[in-house]
Length: 253
Image (cartoon, rainbow, N blue to C red; front, side):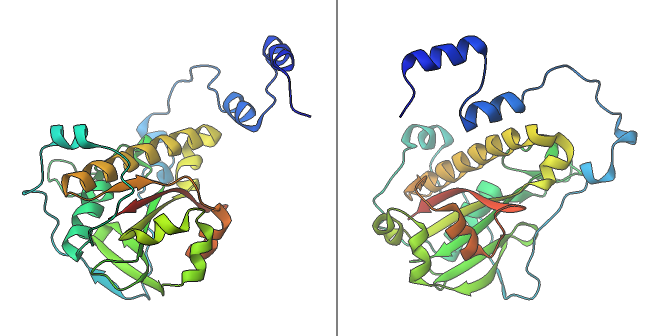
């Protein structure tokens, strides 16, 4: 039997969390202001940027990314929408531009530390990006985006059966590429504890918006997808779903 409105009112009066999201929100609150550690007293792992790579896999170095012929940021913002009509195939140059300007690593001389096109709490960068190529210049298959080289690492060939992890399979299979965003949780949690999970979700939102804007600027449709079976996607990516897990999926085409 479901809860009545009166049940919820009583729970609110007692300030007693009942659902998982309420319990999570309460348990990750900051309850007092603490003086931050001085930089020279902070653990080294708080500052070391970690990169995931598949050194034994075939690496495909992508063309130089380019947005010079794209529309203005103002127009991209006004045109931003979840598009489910996928009629265009991404070239390698398109893939390079979408990946680099959404989640790539900038090389700017005046910034000695790594910087990306989206914010990350404490510059911990827990997110990883995978691409499932369906209808693009890239052969069908699963790839990992290696940020340091703006390259793709070929992991496995495409398997239609693996698409069972997506609820609306028809829309998924029409897209040019599927972007799967995962989080390596400890990169953030080691510094921020359970509160770090909030930061990770904020980061996913920022990266997702980048994919929308860059895709739109290049005249591609982009659509965030909430309908997927987490463990099925994790299994396809060969990740454990605990230390690293899918936290976002987008379709582009």
